[in-house]
Amino acid sequence: MCRSRLYRNFHSAVNERQSILRLLALASLVAAGCGGEQAIRARDGGAAGVAGSQGGGGGGSAGSGGSAGRGGSAGGAGGSVTGSAGGGTGGSTGAGGTTGTGGGVSGNTGAGGGGTGGSGGTGGRPTGNSINGTSCASGDECMSSWCVDGVCCANACTGTCMRCDGATKGNCQPIADGSDPDNECTMDDPSTCGNTGDCNGAGACRKYGSSTVCDSTPSCAGGSIIMTKVCNGIGGANSCIANGTQSCNGFMCSGPTACGTSCGDDSACVSGAFCSAATCVGSPNIAGNGDLEYGTTTGWSAASGTSTIALTMAAGTVHDGQYAISDSVRMAYYQGPGYLLPTGLGAFKVSAWVFQKDPNTTTLTGALTVAVKCKDTTIMPTFINFAQTPMPQNSWAMISGTIDLNATTSVSDCNAAAGGLVRSVLLYLNQVEQGCTTGTCPDLYMDDLVVNITDGHNLVGNPNFEAGFTDSWGVSSGSAVQAVVTTFAHGGTHSLRQYSRQSPATGPRYLLPTGYGRYNVSLWVMQNGTVAHDLTLQSTYTCAQGGGAQTPPSTMTAPMVAPGAWTQLSGTVTLPPPNAMPGCKMTTAAVYVMQEGTACGSGSGQVECPDLYVDDASITMPMPTP
Image (cartoon, rainbow, N blue to C red):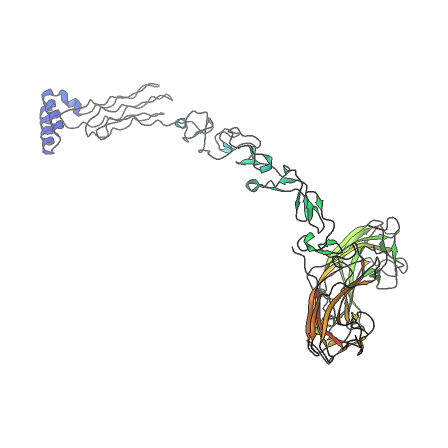
């Protein structure tokens, strides 16, 4: 029977046109008899091994001459003891043999193999069974297949400053702050604000913190002195930044540790500041005598009554410097010391130091108020309370706030565009509590008043004369008559006329605040003489230290303006000018219109002095560069 199977296999191989080598192999099997059958058919694997031993059967030997033998059968079941593998070995090489089946597993991996594509069978890949956190030497031992930092790990754990053998072994976690067991973080020089050489506890290298000095060399930075620099402590964006600065108060610094102290022009000042009386001014305070250091009460008055305004030098009643202002004999809670502001409707930022001496009240509430008087003098002023602060007994307190007269003054006769005007704006201090009776209201004190323009509004409260009044306008020098007329007008129907002028320098004048300031001025002017004249925009100021009225170089001259022709005089005016007396405290400041010549008349060396007209005036303060 075995011989007949051999012959059938032989003929089948011939019919299927197998290779000559296979035919020769089958022929030898015919001669070998039934013994060749064993080579054609691989033997089954052995039975399962005993616990702890390998069980498996061997594959058949390579056949020759006959049909290809198939792979060996599966190996026997592995031993039951953990760690013992059971598996059959693959058969020897058989041409075209069928793939052998791997060994079965009983608690562990059994491996068996058969020939593949004629090659010998191979054993199955062993698979580890160690859980995460178990010590290991390679990934083959771990169920997760990752052995990291000596333990089986849930993942590859490849990030910077990450380990798998931390507090919760087997889980990839950041390395603790201040350590670097894997030497992943280089130590940079503190001047770079780079890495400290340790991990930061969040899966990254730690950067130098905000207390680290990265540059201890003083340096000049525009209008500030930088004494030291520190790291900003912002992770990857860490950089060396200034550790506070010492302001040069409008001056440019002149060296690593020095600020400028004097100027001759704006080049010595920071951007947005200007040079005035040898001082760089960054944020102009229009309250020229706000600190009372003029030694006079110039600019101050009693508000809302007849209380007594006076300078004080008494110990404890001065916030800074030599003087402060006091208001005593107050008859009502709403009375107090006041300071006049420009009349143009707009925004003012105000701050001051205030003080009260009430022997019966430990704390009062101080209030800053403005009283706005407009065209109609028969009605009460508009009162606006815009800032409050507690005033402890015998203790200075800061009070501050911003008031926008455009937003709070809705009375139509205040609005010049609607034919109104503002006659006065008085800022003053009073109290909120109404409990004081006649003659018992406490004395109030103010010092170091600062008033800033915040919106660049027109400071002129009577710019177009449509209300029919000359308020806020005067005569520059000598004498003249002025009135609002409708004979001529640049815009609208009214203008200001000045006639009977005594000298060419006599002309329409507008007063400016006495604080150091820079102004953009624009006036529309006309003359109605018989010949053309030069018309000039001129400024003037007076210092409290003496010297009389000063006239800087003119701002602009319109040459040979024909009679009856409106022309614009405009330009920038700085008062006091850069070359004024250092420390000048201005008692007056103004701009006005004048003409050429030194004397009025028709004689030799004299000139015609025609009537002058002004309309549509604008005086603004440029806003500092942010």
